[in-house]
Length: 196
Ligand SMILES: Cc1cc2nc3c(=O)[nH]c(=O)nc-3n(C[C@H](O)[C@H](O)[C@H](O)COP(=O)(O)O)c2cc1C
Image (cartoon, rainbow, N blue to C red; front, top):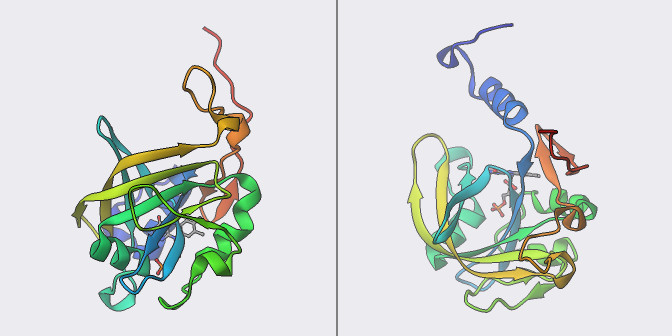
């Protein structure tokens, strides 16, 4: 066992420890729209639930070199809206491509050949191919450390009938969600309950 003081570690070393230790992480495939009307689609795995009533999600976005906002962060700041789309494992290639630093003027739905579907309550479109999408309105933004935390309230859930069970639970095996482990991807499953 090696014990390391965080203060002695470089940002790169810290990132490697965090992304390998806090695993597996869900992926928020996040759609936003710029003031100019250009769609953006980017994955964020520093992502979790912060409240169930009202339903709220949190994304953590790094800043770009020089302290600039990523396009997603800029769009969320300007429009106050975003959509979190859940990714199934067969979408890993598209997710990876969508993480490239495309210029803000490039529509990333087109780059990854995904279909933008109009949302009900927000301007950014959702991903038609995703089995779950959550339309969010910006609630608050925090800067506790190096990253920018964005909290959004979910105003609409879209769930494909094929993964919505009669009791209201999600059929997670059917959803087959893609996960993030360090700088790689992982499947979810098989699922199990420990013996009593
Ligand atoms: C699976 C995956 C997860 C990622 N998670 C994050 C994250 O949690 N926070 C972050 O700032 N960047 C993350 N990235 C990198 C961003 O996706 C990338 O910088 C993003 O596409 C920036 O695009 P934008 O400038 O269009 O917003 C991740 C990349 C991948 C492939």
